[in-house]
Length: 230
Image (cartoon, rainbow, N blue to C red; front, side, top):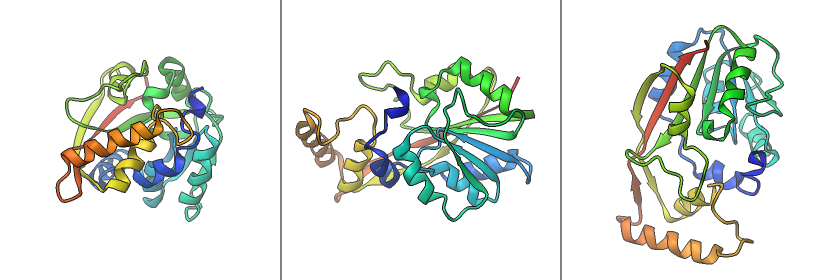
């Protein structure tokens, strides 16, 4: 099940996944009234949720995975304006017409898009907006060995006529962070899985070949899709 895809990977996810540039967050803030209520769907370990909460907004962090929620609780402990909710994109458990802004960070490809749209209509107030934000390497939106849509592909299916804004978000990986970043990917093996050692050897070979002075550069771009609920 999708809800268990990141079981055993939350710590690596929290330590190594790239965040989102401040200019992207400022842009999202420019779209929301000062008293807006956010729902961050598929909040994970709170990478985006924390940035929303820091801005002072009330935010529901909706996350189905228990491992993710455990770290999410630590991430959001300092923010009384943030509430963790056990729910999915399709069944958030939030009240009807309760939120102004619905966000999903690097998560849209996991959702049943039709059912999620219906849920957005249900929980969104009048003129609520839906925002999908994700990091991508330009020209590469394929998920090897997966039938799941990438975040980019899912956004192109879900949104009808969105505004799309891009922000540069370059990342440098040390060996430790590179291995943790890959450990956080749902399809990659855990230490207890067959082929784990060969997988780590392969990742180290990539870093050795592509790094400079021990750092691997990734030219990430943060893409933000925005649309009002129809």
